[in-house]
Length: 216
Picture 1 (cartoon, rainbow, N blue to C red):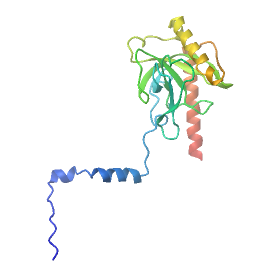
Picture 2 (spheres, rainbow, N blue to C red):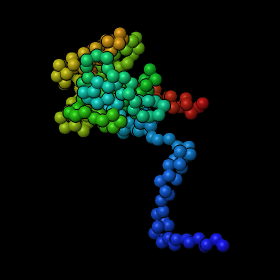
Picture 3 (tube, rainbow, N blue to C red):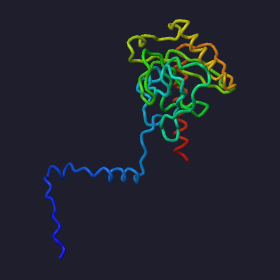
Picture 4 (cartoon, rainbow, N blue to C red):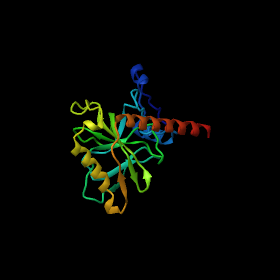
């Protein structure tokens, strides 16, 4: 004779807040058709764009590792270690919900006091543009300051920065691919109004991309 199965009487509180065992939650998450938040598409650009906007940091200030967004998964991956004896002079990342002619989000160099971990996002204020040609293709960079860094948030235009700071930025991008036999040309820095135009243009391209994707 099979002994009777004892059943536990759960209180109303435990029934209301019952949590499935860990293994069930893992299996459930593997079978659901869901994806994690994607920093390029799911993070908003911010209500004050194109002047102030969110930036997802890919590369920390002082890093020799070239991290970049994996567009398929939304994760930050290691692309390579720089071949030259240089490090990124400032935090480097991209503006969510923007698109450039190279099919990537708009790049930003964020000037601030401290290095930021890859994958974090912050508010940045555009102060200029660094026009750049990378292996024959347009690859402009927005120059920005952290909008919540008390040492830098008051800067409004790239001309307010010390000339040596701009020379360092220019030299880094001119040199960082030389040992890979890749050619990079950096043109004269442009003021903040050109940065606003570049951000707005990349927002418009992204919006067109979304509309076109929905039509498909």
